[in-house]
Image (cartoon, rainbow, N blue to C red; front, top):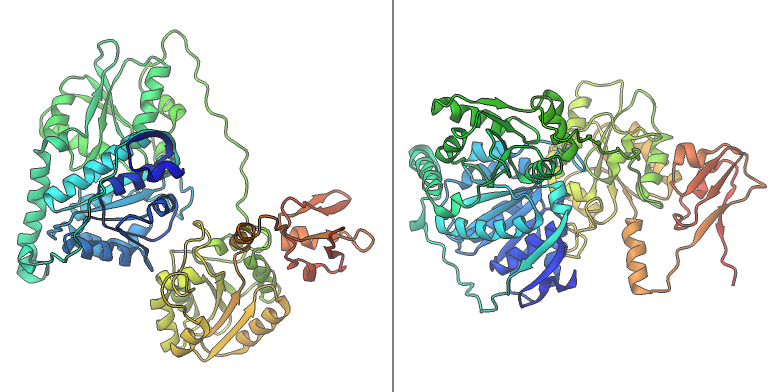
Amino acid sequence: MKRINENNSFKAYVMGNYALARAMIESRVRVITSYPGSPTPEIAEALSYFKDRDFYFEFSSNEKVAIEKAAGASLNGHLSCCFFKSVGLNVASDSLIQLSMMNLIGGLVVILGDDPGANSSQNEQDNRHFSRMSYIPMIEPSSVKEAYVFLKKSFEISRKYNMPIIFRVTTHLAHAKGIVEFDKLDLKDYDWSPKFDKKNGPYVPVASSVFPLKKMALQKLENLKNDEAFKSFNRIVKSEVKTDRAIITSGLTFSASLEAVKKYEIKADILKLGFTYPLDEKFIAEVLKEYKEVFIIEELDRVLETEIKSIAFDFGINIKIHSRSDEYLMGEIGVSDVIDILSKKWDILQNNFEINFEKKSFPRFPQLCPGCGHRSAFFAVKNSITETDITVADIGCHTLGFLPPYEIGDVLFSMGHSVSTGAGLALKNKDRKVIAFMGDSTFFHAGLSGFINASILNSNIILIILENGTTAMTGHQPRLGTGEVGEKIDLVEFIKNCGVKFIRSVDAYNQSKLKEYIKEAKDYEGFSVIIAHHPCMLKFTREMKIKNPNYKPSKVFIDESLCGLKKVCVSKFACPSFVNEKDSVYVNEELCIGDGSCIQTCPDKAIKPKKEVK
């Protein structure tokens, strides 16, 4: 969407993440930091259209570094923004928890991409709890247009109160599209002079200073609740007929609820909460007094339900409050889900309307791309380990090694955990070898502490670093050390300088050499590291096409005269380019990139490079 960087006001149909990026630039955000993670990476893609603007952006080594850098810039008087995915908040939380006690003179908004339904995460944690734990206000938009408008308002409020704000979007809102009317850009020059002054603090929450700082954080929340701007985030959508029933909701579930109410002519008003923390207790209490029954619809945990029931109790309001059954405590909530939820308690259908539930699409296994070096590595590893060996997975494209046919990865906690968890599994363990896996991006993100620990203590594990030179799973954002951003780091030298004695490096396509190194490592007593490197082929082929529009990847074919239909290419190597039919196997040329990593896997040597006919 190239018009996104237009100076003047205009109207456009854009993705939610693009609307957020434009809101940042219009608000003159000066420092933006991130660590890539779905559903937020497209914000960075949209920001790339504004390269000529006077702001600073970086993909930090992890979310903790990102939020600390943004907060530091805010202490210097610069309006800042940080964005990452749901579980990234776990990494950032150590510092996030302190931010409500800091006088952030520049303002700071943290855009959080939560993931109900675990579309791209190892869990669907409800990060609304973090706002309550950290005393940081939380705003939740319900549409692409509202995301743009609310984010601009969030920056204003953050600057006004010198406080951080969590701006929570979910996967479907981040990736949804909608029509937005954008304002013109402010092109004035910006004063980058540092404005940090310790008199604006204190900024050191230790001992007795913690209590006045906490009191200040709580007072800011109270002041915020009396602000007209705060009150404008909440609104009531009235039914066309007078009713004694209401739905209370927020975020994308408001959009689903509104569509359900309109589609099925449900007689219910809707209270939409834009500020979901802190709640406007007095306003909510006044609303509750107007109805006999309310239904609270929210995704994931019973956060609003618990707090609204508490408000009803505290204000002595006699009202029946309904919520979802337990089956809806997981996953996303769409229009059909809202109908199902309401129909369990209310007779909601008018004029004998029929409920047509959405048809679920046939599930498709996630899989590694054709030519992926991880597939070649896993094939070699699978042929080098025994059933008693313990394999420890990590976060990244290589997590897919857990699926058939490789089935590598017996345990998974979080990003960067594998070397530490593997070291724990190896303690006093003389019978079963432990092999941990980690991507090179994850290595720099969250793996270094565990890696140093394993190196110094010489933990008896094998660490296989699957190096593809990028942050592939979230869209090929640059990782530290490749030279794309900052200095280039030689990974072998880096690991050697950390005290590791056993280091081997091999192209992931070279399966025989990789198997040789794994055998060596299994015989080695102590911490051993194998780097299986190969560039991400999806990124590689895209870059080749950009450099040469006429570029065509090579192909392989199956020589039927040699093929014994052992189907190793399908059942054990499992490249999606191979098509399995009853009496034959052939190559889907639309998918094949001709990398040739499959050639060495065929016991009949029937896979061969295809020569172009000129």
